[in-house]
Image (cartoon, rainbow, N blue to C red; front, side, top):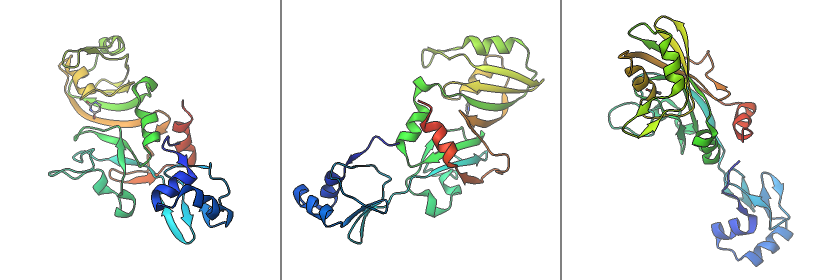
Length: 238
Ligand code: URA
């Protein structure tokens, strides 16, 4: 899952300064374990989430973590902030270390946020060429008309970035509520798109990212670990 793999002998040598030729001897003496199994091959590839033990010393114990969280409004999608509470502050401290956020939401937006310490997994989700759809429920101040559907699908010119937004899908739910599906995440994108119609966004809630749907039982501020199937659906989406 991660691209940061290295040979077992190189990994141990870098961690312990033991020479690589001596590591062969340690392997022969069955003193090295990878994920609870005696290692036999100096060429074995190990990544950032393999447990590696030499004798009784744990050289690496880094568990991969994948969480979904229902971000409340008023909480910042950042790991540190001097003024507001962050999504990391919502997590128990024993799972919060070294996590990063996958796909931010504005301060006054709510809904699905993913957190992980696995950089390969998060970049598989966020690489622009993957065009992973993100769905939002949007409440508006004024009525939405059918014209919006075509305008969102055509894309809009954003002068600041000098880009035309990718085709976005807008479905009208009620006269002041829509679902919007984006294939990208430009700064304040949905607010700016409705801004073209002078229609202020009153509430914005992300419901899904690709195949990952915010669990309805998660109240604002609550979170849960992703299942193996949910983790795999991103890893396998190449
Ligand atoms: N578009 C916005 O304007 N804000 C968000 O938080 C997400 C998408």
